[in-house]
Image (tube, rainbow over all chains, first blue to last red; front, top):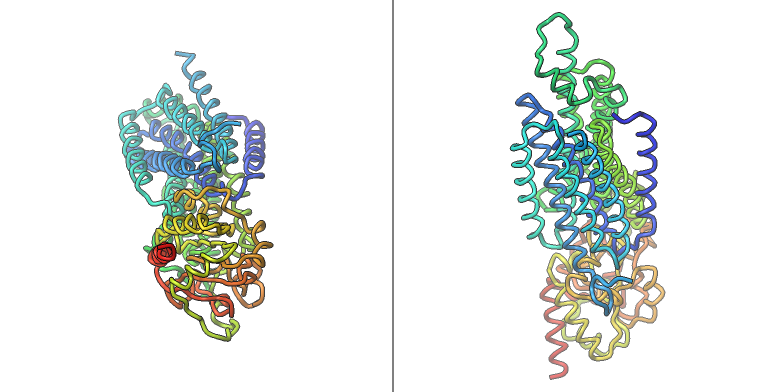
Length: 100
Length: 486
C-alpha cells in the first residue's frame, strides 16, 4: 500500500502533467486526443486483471471477469480508433510521419 | 523469485512513462501517429507484467476475458465508420468506467468477506482465505482506501451508464431528449441518495445490500443525468465522462496499490477536464449550462419571427456561380459527413481549384460531433490541411469571399447566435458566412437542424437554397461543373 502523502504527491503531479500536455493543443487534434486519452485509461484493464486474479468467490470471479472484459474492450477499442484517426493526418505536401 | 515483483514494478513504471510521452506526442500533428504507438507499447508491457504477478489466480479466465474483450473491440473499432467515431469513443469510455466500477465492487465485497472472517476470533477460521489475504497484502482496506474506492466506484458507475446513454443517443437508438417536470430535483435526490449510501459504506455499514443499493443508485444517476442532454451537447458530455473514467481509474488504482493506474488515470482525469472546458468554451457555454441547462427546451417559445422566404437554386446555377467566382469558401457540417459526401465535395473543390478558383474549407471549432471531428473527416477524404481554416482565421475573409457553400452545417452559421438573445445558441461564436457576397446552402429540406433551431441565414437576401441530400447535391455540382467544360 502506498503511503498517504506519497499518493497525494503522485495525484498532484500527475494532474499537472495531464493539464500541461493538453494546454497547447491545436483544435484539429482534440478528437484524436480525446480518443487517445480514452485509450490511456484503458490501464484499468490491469486493475481488473488483479481483481479477477485475487477473486475467490464465484460472485467475485464473475464480477472480475466482466471487469476484465470491459477493460480489455476499453484498451483495444481505444487503441484501434485512435490509430485509425491519426493514420489519416497527412502534413501538407510532405510525407506522413516526417520527423523534424 | 524475489526479483519478480521488482520487475513488474519496473514494467509499470515504463508503462506510465510511455503513456505520458505518448500523450505528449499526440498533442502535435507531426508526431501524433507515433504517440499512440508509444502508449500502445506501454499498455502491452503493463498487461504482460500483470500476468507475471506472483499471487494471481484464475489465469485461464483472465486470459479468456482479455482475448474476448480485445477481439470484440478490435473488430468493432476496425469496421466503424469515421462519422460514428464519437459514439465509439463514448462506448469504449463507458466500458472503462464499468471496469473501474467493477473493481470497486469486487474490492468492497471482498472487504465484507474479510470483515466477516476477521471479527469472530474463536470461530473456525478458513485458513485458505487468510492465506489469500496475506498475499493480497491488505487484510483490511484503510479508511482512506475505502473512501477513495467508494468514490471511484461512484464516478465509474456514472461514467458507465452515462456513456452508454450517450452512445445510444448518438447512434440514434434513443429519442433525442427525455425531459419530465421536476427532473432536476429527482436527479439531485438520486445523487444525494447514492452519496449517502457511499458514506454509509465508509462509516461502518459495509454490507452487501448497502453495496448493491449504492451501485444501483450510482448507475441510475448516470442514466438520469445524461437523458435530458441534447445530441448537440453530447461531445462535451462524452469528454466529461472520459475525464470521469480517468479519475475513477486513478482512485481504484490507489485501492489496488497500483501506481501505473494512479498516474495514467490522473493524467487523463486532468487532461479530460481541460479538454471538456475547451469544448464548452468553443460552444460559448459553461459546463453547468450543458449539464443542467436542458438545451433546446426554450426554443420555439419566444423565438424571433423570421421575415422572408427561403429562395431555392438549382445545381447548374450554383455550379456556374462558383466556377466563375474568385474565392469560394466551403463550410462543411456533420450533415455532409452523414451523407458520406466529403469525397464528392473534395472532388468538386479540386475541379474549382483547377479552374483557378481559390478554395478554402472553413471549420467551426465544434463542426461535426466533436472539436476536430470535421478535420478528421476531411482528412479521410484526402483534403490537405493547408486548405482548412479555423474560424478565427477565416471570419475576417468572408466579406471578400464571392460564394460560400454551406453543406450540412446549420447552427454554426446561424446569425441568430449574434442577433437574437432569446435563441438557445445566443452568444455562440459562429462562422460569419452571411458577410459573403453569396451563400449557397445545401440542405435536405426546409426543417430545422440537429438542435431544432430556426436559422435566419436561410432567409437572407443573398442566400440560395440547394435542396437535396448532401451526397446527391455534391454529385450534381461535380457533373454540372464538368459539363461547363465539355
